Image 1 (cartoon, helix red, strand yellow):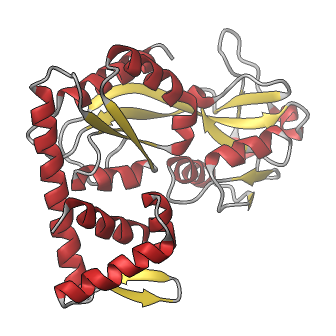
Image 2: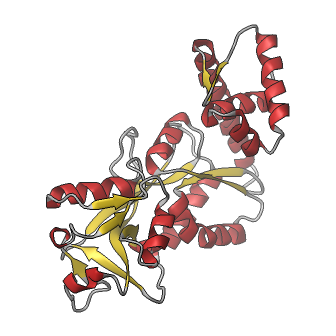
Image 3: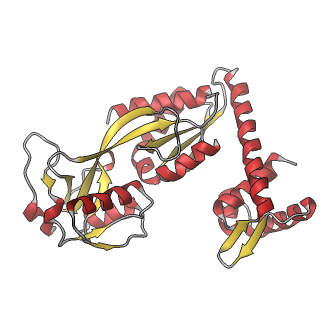
Length: 302
């Protein structure tokens, strides 16, 4: 039994699709499908059931996958301990972060990290905070930037900063008629109760921005018109900048652009807390600690 083969099986389970797993593994779909057939034949059990929508684990497959994940995690921990003996002269760190936040923060973080630790390989896992918590519990990432409050993680995390959730609008949008001016602050503000008549572009329910924005509507007692709910937060913000509706973003991701206005929600604003979290292990590699330090330094400047 080879670690590469275990990684194939875990990737198939994560993607629930042979084609998507093949893309992630940089191999031909036919090769991965053939591997799975041969591997199941050697084991003498079916690990996955083929369906019209993809694949799903069998009962035996679930047992195998959980053990495969555990083996891969412990192997990675062993690697980290061995690399640490070399004082960061090599090694690997897996960083989890949301795709939206990664676009705005990762280039600076990775540039600084590479300058300080040029021999450490960084792998990026893009997922929302809820999915990243699952990965931390499973030990498949070494450190992650997640939004609080936690849903599954119970151990202590490192607070990073408070990030404001703001509204994105085109400067010619009718919302400008109900904007409240605020002296000495970065953004003016709006009262959601004045905004039920406008159209909104929201990301999925299972994202932080999608969930928080909907809670704010409920709190204000309004039911606005919502469109394009199955898109990313980045695309929603881009559409709002063009005047196709209103969307939400984070202050840390609010790039100054001509014709774009960012507005606080309420006079005091709406905030969430960001934190650094590590998996459920007793050992944290030097590479993971070094990455955490760089993230704290970069985000502390924003």
